[in-house]
Image (cartoon, rainbow, N blue to C red):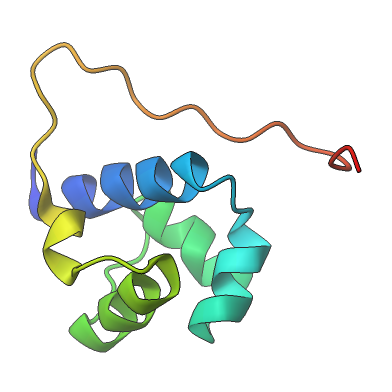
Length: 86
């Protein structure tokens, strides 16, 4: 797994664990929602500055984005779309 794939995998995993939408994370990090989506889809290659902002918004160390998944780990599932229950 290359670096871009690790960042994509871990960004989604961490975001989903915290039950954050791409929009919420983007607002907290001061980036565009489409950029968060592009990172997760591996179409954008984020700078260290963007990774720092995302890490701060997720309250993690930037190194968490480079965690190597165990062999056989399933990809993180996206959050259910639509309105969230109150």
